[in-house]
Image (cartoon, rainbow, N blue to C red; front, side, top):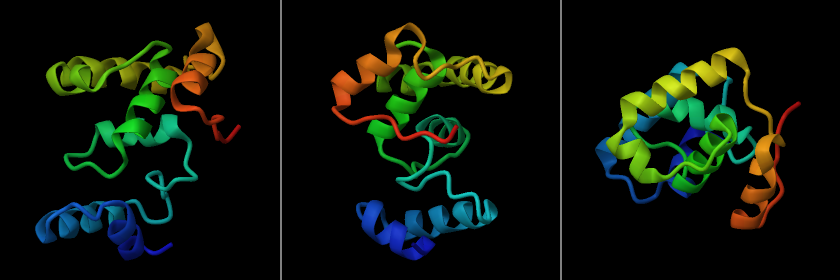
Length: 121
């Protein structure tokens, strides 16, 4: 899928200016398509926290962060406590402290989202 196709299909609510900004951000990643549906949700969420414009759905962001942090995460926490959650996510990502099966997170996410996790191992 081309960058333009992804933007048109997945980010269709963005303004023309926002689409242009997303395209610029995506180009800097080259072949790393962390925002794609096939991407590991943990990696997608971690990358999204470091970008100023949304490139993945809120569901994937919350799902990936919950796995990464090993606990439930909510959008309000990201909005109102962004600096803290980015620091926590960076530590977990750097130290590879997340486990897709840890503390029942996998089971909880399956229950909430109804889909199996698709991860690269």
